[in-house]
Image (tube, rainbow, N blue to C red; front, side, top):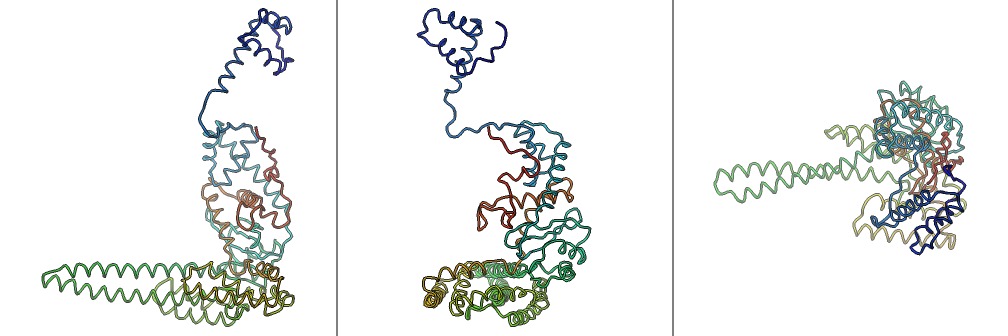
Length: 494
């Protein structure tokens, strides 16, 4: 009678417990159950008490809303969480605290480091195995960690990280070797770094596109600062003017008048300076568009570079580091800002042949109008003017294309919507990499390999790449649970 009765199923035990707990239990029920199941009356009563307690606990009212479930913790789940915390930039010691506080798992620092080491080795093998076949243009950038450069190579359309490597230096020879180890790209985008430029030459890449964002961003930032200084000068003048009007004595009036004259002069200088700089900034910004808005053709690179060089000379006449920096950039590197133009013209040529020049020129103008409105807010008068021109271009395109208008529009939007002028995608990846490098106690090539794998395998939740990971965008097969590629078992839901 003392043996375990594991052959009795839960359904049978439930029926026995309910029969015992029933207030209408017939006389002799306990004796019949004991004889039938060969169990003692004490064991039957104990089972009934467990059933009663369990039912009361289950049916007792609790907090409203969804109830958080306690996760089922095993070795596989702990290791997966360790890798994800590393991906989020949590240090090794921080990972210890998270596992202890969130999952009541007191893991040693050595266990955390060993888990990350194994994941990094597996990530390096997967990165080497993945060989994407893509002809997209690339962007490159460098980020320093522990006084050593980490060189990054990113696809401009897929955001796939083709290379992320730690080197002893970032010279042209080093960059050239990194570029030669990866697929030949039709265009390489970067900032104006000397090492990058030298590496592109040594690697034999024909098109080196300089990054417009490195010019546009500080230039418009200075416009905002200049306007803020002008408004501050106006506020100071108006505040002093109030004091002047409230003064009664000749001495006070003379004192405030002298200050007013000085503030008026400073105010006028700052207003004039802000207005002049904004006009130059608008001239530079007008060269940023892919399409000449009046003609609908791709911008002429030689004429555009000459206009920027003239503006660069004007900037150099101003006093200030930012003006000298932007002026030197335009004077010396303007040609590199339009290196993309021949490729863009080549990409658009089939559309001219298929749909006709008048239709493509009209659609190109429409695309540029919409791009300009998205970049900068416009006044009501400007919006009306742009809308009128936009409608005229649409009518011109419809007269030529008819019902095929939207097919042609999709084709030209796909081409013009690509990344042609910047390396901002590499900057975005670096902004994700920096927290990881800053918070890891130690960083090495293994840390970079793991970051590269996780970035390439994660699916985007929003944007034009939503539903795809960078690896899938370059035609690589990635399982729904990419961590299984690192040797982890699939996550089990309980």
